[in-house]
Length: 333
Image (cartoon, rainbow, N blue to C red; front, side, top):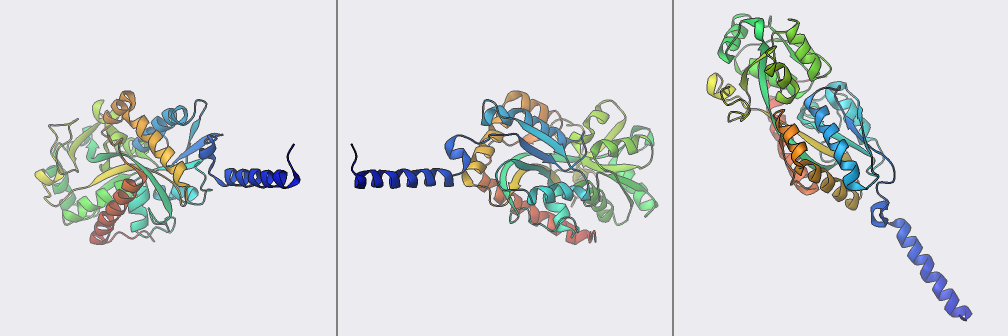
């Protein structure tokens, strides 16, 4: 039988242990996740960013927990800043995440959008670089334009009269098309839409003449012949379209632009939760089926990033986009 002193000491020790256990993140007790995780995609369904979010959602749940579930919620608008702002304000518990693009986490905040009063690393917890993607300059196949030089010549011949489509005001497609006209020494008319699928539709209907969009958002229309890919925006040609030149080699030597997809959570996620989410995302990206699906749309998966390397990546890319925004004078408010 325990004495009163022994019982009191044991009770105190048990209370201390219980308190310590309760103060740890749920992951430490094997309870994370104990409900469904939501990945917010800040674009309409159908684009490359949406595909990446859905591929991650499909695989991350069971990788985190045998009965784990991850859902996708589309929250488009504000140049993809509305969805980002929703996640920024969410509880930092790992149950609300953002799969954003360069539009979301670089262009929108760099260009002064009122809906994007956030910093990509100071106001979020970086988790994983999902992948990088080239942008493509596309026109309707029936436009009669077959080369990037022909498009640039027409922009110069009709300054301010040619319209281009984008997946939203302040997005990377907006920046890319405006940057193209700016470097050509002319201007064009911006017609924003609410996602990559609507951008392609506007071109096919003849509402706009060209777009600079993520290849994954328009690759289907390129392959079925509805759109023509004139050039890619990267420094080197894309392996999926080896016969298509870069903008730099064909007409504008200073033009280079790459977009990307990154997963982040709200600021101040517990380190253990952040590490678990990052590792699950990387494991999903390493799976052959996921890699093949992303690569088929022009996205190169990066299954080896960490929260620390993702933070460094975002800081570097944000600086690059700030310089482009300043160069072309893009201000959204």
